[in-house]
Amino acid sequence: MKKIERALISLTDKAGIEGFATELAELGVDLLSTGGTAKKLRDAGLDVRDVSEFTGFPEMLDGRVKTLHPKVHGGILNQRDNEEHRRQCADHDLQNIDLIAVNLYAFAETVADPDCSLADAIENIDIGGPTMLRAAAKNFNDVTVIVDPADYPQVIAEIKATGNTTLKTRFRLAAKVFKLTSTYDTAISAWLDKVDVETNSFFDGE
Image: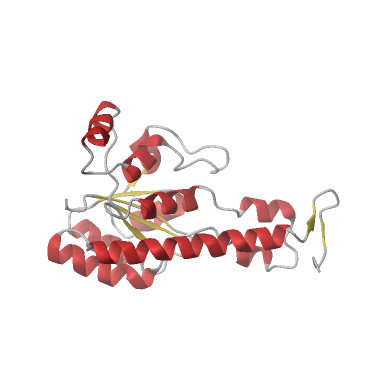
């Protein structure tokens, strides 16, 4: 198993990220990030590359498109032991992304506000986050994916020990991803069931 060389960190809940990212950097891991997370890491004195620099494509559409790019998803999804995948990555200048630390837009918290509008709710439906998480979880053989800050210490301990995490840990973390994204989509679906889109009004759905 190769050592973890590159991490993409993009968080709504940034608790504990400075310490985690600092330890990754001290272990020689290249840090990629977006928006407010990148700023927070730079403010902590860390060298961070914007995802837009990594992809060569700017963030756009009011932030709706940041990480939806082949250089991100190819870097996550390629199977490292697959010779054809390695060839295609070389042909298209795709670099591996070995660790993903992502959590999602706070949809449930947004719609809990009684003054939340349909437009506000829609803008808090995360697209890029679940896409990266599901990609990384699908490729757990090669990629470590973190959605819970409580997992930072174990991940760091394993990287310090061997340069990477264990397959058992990666599988456990992947399972957490699918539980999270399932819960997230269920919350969105349940809330939208209460919306009359033509009048922008709400009902109890009973």
